[in-house]
Amino acid sequence: MSLTTYDNYLKTLPKPHKLLKMLRPPVYEIELSNNQLNATAYYKDGSTKSHQVNADFSNRRLLFIDFPTAMQALVDLLHKFPKHAYGISGIAVVNVSEELLDGLTPVETRMIIEFIHVASNQAKRRVISTVISYQGQAVNQ
Image (tube, rainbow, N blue to C red; front, side, top):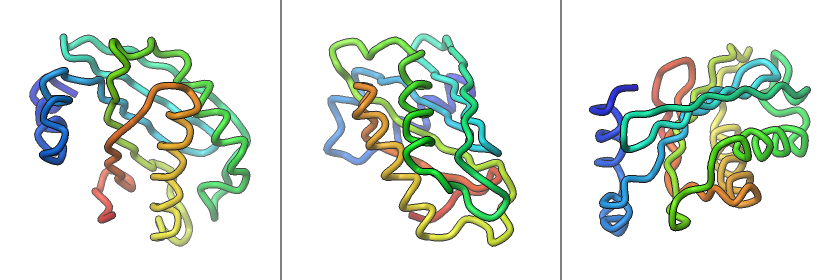
């Protein structure tokens, strides 16, 4: 992700978040694949940090077979990143790279949104906006 892409994510924030845009929060790009969470944080200065966590939470049919395990894995992953300055919120970009037999269902899409928001609050790395894609294609929320 380049600095231009980082700026594009900030432009997609709703108007009520005008102050947040000026503070330039981090963008977390989270990849969900077979029992693996990869995350890269992109910061306003162009720097990045990446981390990975493995946990037994999915199978070929369903993205989440063990939601609490997946939740704890994401909390552990987010704890590996530094806390936001002044408590500013971040933006999550989630890509489901694992090929699911039935594709990504609307229920799973909603579950991902809840998954990101609850885990980020538990990790004290609050996320205010979530963008979801399935194998690189944007998903309507």
